[in-house]
Length: 105
Ligand code: SF4
Ligand code: SF4
Image (cartoon, rainbow, N blue to C red; front, top):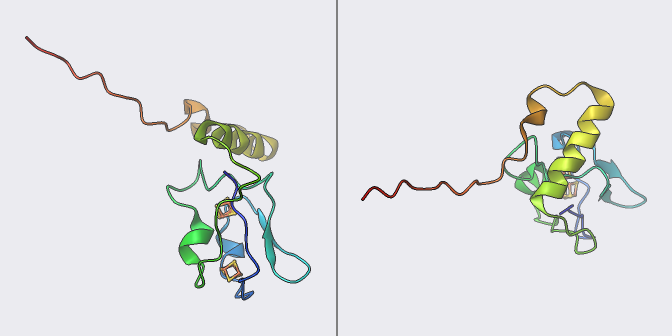
């Protein structure tokens, strides 16, 4: 899912430099998130960085842009592909693969 910034934003400028995708920009009155660029930090970090640093907790999930982790991963790949060649990025999505426990016996 892409995230969004609500009007509780106090324009503290903290989140903008933290975004690895340059998805955060200053809008007309408050900061905004470009849903085409926000991967919820998938591909870069375990947690959404902007959410972590926001002092007023005004960055919820954008209900208009609900995406699976795999879709976010693909978005991340699209974003990085346009800028650089893929290296470690083509290993596939970091989805928790259910480990088949060896049932001995
Ligand atoms: S969740 Fe990550 S990618 Fe999305 S806007 Fe926040 S810092 Fe940027
Ligand atoms: S960290 Fe939160 S309050 Fe600060 S600019 Fe970003 S969204 Fe607004």
